[in-house]
Length: 352
Image (cartoon, rainbow, N blue to C red; front, side):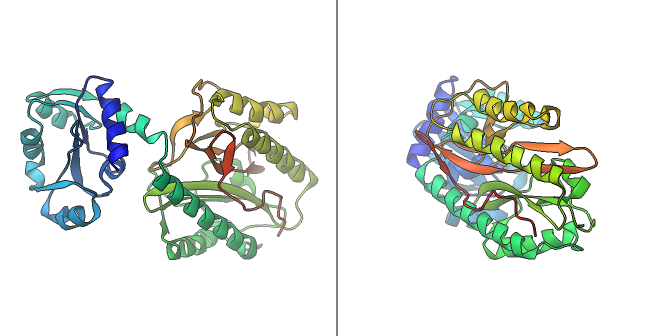
């Protein structure tokens, strides 16, 4: 945690600030080890303070790492913050206008998430260990899928079963705000929607079923996707699956320290385009993962960021034929001099 905090302060100093003030639970957790309702302060001395109400005080004291806890009422949190940060040059992730206005009355303040997000780009050993364990659990859930999916079952029934198993492994919903479902489970024509909402549609013979498992374990998000076949899968569907599988393998094989993100996207996209399906690959090739579902770097055609050791990213090309079918194959990887593939579950098309 000391190295993590020093890295945070270094990024803050780079933009002329000597103190970080976190309001978002993700940044608070990264800075303190505590996930809860509070304000967290990190000074250039590496002293770390949590200001919270009595509702969260006990958890903050027991779950945070080397933090001073200040108890306040909810109404007085900002007043306590002001008294704790006198004469500080603050960088904060806060986007609440009234809070920022009050802070500006007392301190120099910069509103920026850059120090937080830039620090979180490179994972430390503890984070990588958690992500490795999380990936192994997701592989177990894919094993369950291979034995559980059947014709006549609904998307919602499969989601319910998988979430019950996930929670037994202490994996939970990520709280991703752009969906009302914890998972993406999409069969047949629903699979043509990359962010499909889970429905009561029953799986039919011939369906391809996209199962995207994005779940949180000990604060960190693991993300992988497999596409299964059911019954009489058409030759066209099998061919599309093979194109995506090969595209994904090209992307994975090019992950290494120093490679530009756009190059990886290009290797996947060019292969799909060479088979006349380029217009049906409608999203970026991947993204970073960590405390958030989507973190930097984005593996897109426009991102010129170079990969660095201990970034953790996804590679997930897909083909989506409207009203007919969709295929996506996704793995999470640790960037090294080459790469470490976090998921071991087969990427061969399993027809169940």
